[in-house]
Image 1 (cartoon, rainbow, N blue to C red):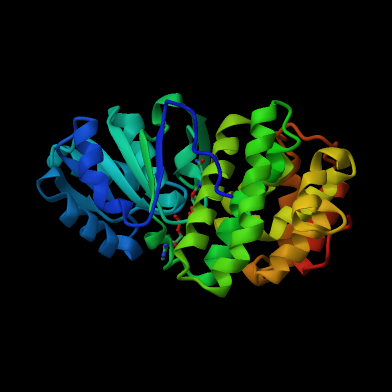
Image 2 (spheres, rainbow, N blue to C red):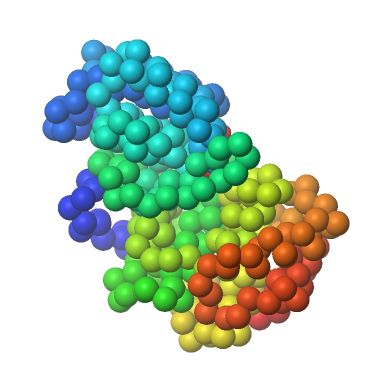
Length: 353
Ligand code: NAD
């Protein structure tokens, strides 16, 4: 059963195979004539194809988007956008490329069309994380919510199996933390459960048959739902830990989410088991943390920080950093509690509950 399309008028969202070929029409609709197409270096081929499709409505291609939106890359892209007199941005790729589009929109006020090819969900949020001098800061600004999002499952079929699994768990993490968010509503609960359900069903299908457009479309619908809740409610311990591990220990984004999620959810399940019950109902296992751990294992996601390259000697510092300026959390976050959680996540042990 496909998820409902978003009702928020602020953003136009479409799902469908081949829809990337309709971007020229979207540009016409929003009155834009000179799009700068953005991508990472690895996806420059797709960016060039899209620009070719746009014909005279393409002003150029900038293919140097990078993880965590480094300000120096944004400034380079901004200079490029000005030199080609771009009047909007088309970002094709994962959260890194979407981040660049948002950073450019923030600085220019120009419209963005996003064509997501991972499940990170940034396209559905007004949130931007940027890195300057090795320090990551996050801002929220309704003006940077992309105007149009085009989910084309044909572009997701190339997402490698392991990145499909970890990116899916990254999306599920937004939904899992939304279930106990202080500012949750009936609507965000519904979206979160729909997002988790979409991935629980379609991620195993995608891994079995990576070329299945139906399964890929279902994962993209899940990505939108999980991204939408990330943009609507506050996140807690899990996102704080991943932010710390990514920012201070340079661990890869989606993989870190995939490893930490079951442990953070098991930690919080002690305080709010009833709010997390939908996770075990959807995944069909006892205990929400354990259910996620089993699911992650079944789809071949990494299950230890050790295998992501983190040194055991860094765990003390990570725990100390993560208790500083804590996000609101449904359970008290103690240094000892976090240190134990990190030890399990590092070694790959199953979470407690
Ligand atoms: P990513 O965008 O860095 O992509 C990872 C790699 O996979 C890149 O090389 C990319 O080119 C490649 N790739 C992407 N899609 C592909 C496909 N379909 N086929 C083949 N290769 C593909 O990774 P990500 O996990 O999507 O994004 C991570 C970034 O997004 C982080 O910087 C994170 O902070 C940010 N993020 C922001 C928000 C937000 O709301 N602001 C939400 C989630 C993530």
